Image (cartoon, rainbow, N blue to C red; front, side, top):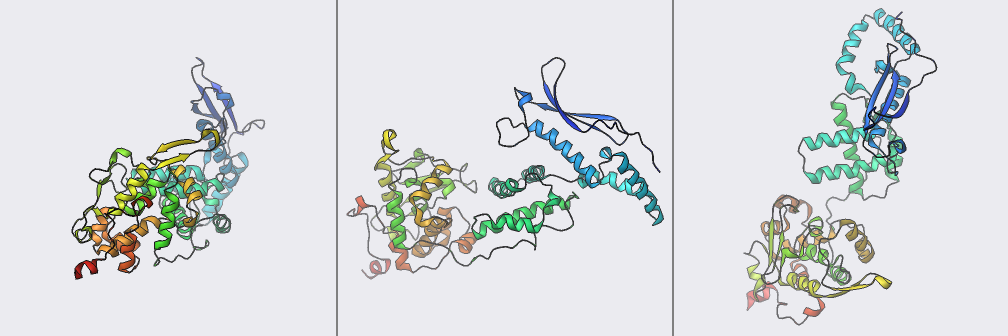
Length: 449
């Protein structure tokens, strides 16, 4: 049998916060004994002013990343001791005796322990268990290094954050399909979001599996966790009456009025509309600019309104034009008198707000537009569908909306009768009911005359 020095019986792995001799820096130090019985120390430099108040509890006042790193190191060592994994420096004397017995058994079946050790040394880093928070950080870093689009990275973070909130203390190999099913079933998610979350988690697990980390033999996010059925052929759009109700409610709230108008009539995505500045909107020569740094595909768009009396025929040839009611609604929210706030904090302003925080828009939308709660991207779906079927040029719609023709055809092209589509572009704000820009004749009637 293999003999090794015995670790002191009165010493356990511990975490201590100590300062350097010159008192300039503080360190969180993890102390333990390695397989040779030697006392080891690993230091994690603290950046906080009051180091002795640090803790590793995320979200609390005294949370410290360095303290957490030291704490996680000791937890990994403790876990390796418990599971007898190949962290040799963490083995106790009793576990080293078991190691020796395993060596004798390996020889009996024709495998030398030296070969096993060589294989283990070659892969010992990845084969160590990895806790979920560290796994998520490493996975995101890998995807950033792979130069994925920022929107894709943001989606990964959102989905994995749901998993981390529930299983922060677990290692990746400890996740089981039954508990994952309970977790995902308890979340209030749309079917597509439900499935996207599981798909992202499954992608992360496979990413570590491909890199030979100790994550278990089977994907816990696979067949053991139920996906929800989605009606992918149905594209959710607003009816004409619903569109009028949404506009009537939205234009009364200065926090969402402009964003809703830009989505419904100017082909701007909600994420882009939230970041639009007032200076990018021109009333004299009606145009809305979506700069490249806020555009989803990082390509600038310059959408303009057609204000001529015979705008319908011209819409067939003008690639970046939207009908006159787009500028009518925009002018309405730009010049409307608003009252916002409550009680003594109530204030008045002229024109809606621009560059609205995403959470502010979401909260006001949930309160003001309850009729479309849970209908994701329904405003954008409505714009694209009505523009395609009114003017019959998907390439023009793609230039205004900033989507490819293929994406429009797959995700936004819900069949709508032409007369209904034109009726959508005749919806005008209250102050514009008698405006001469409002053209009520259809293209067929114009052709007859």
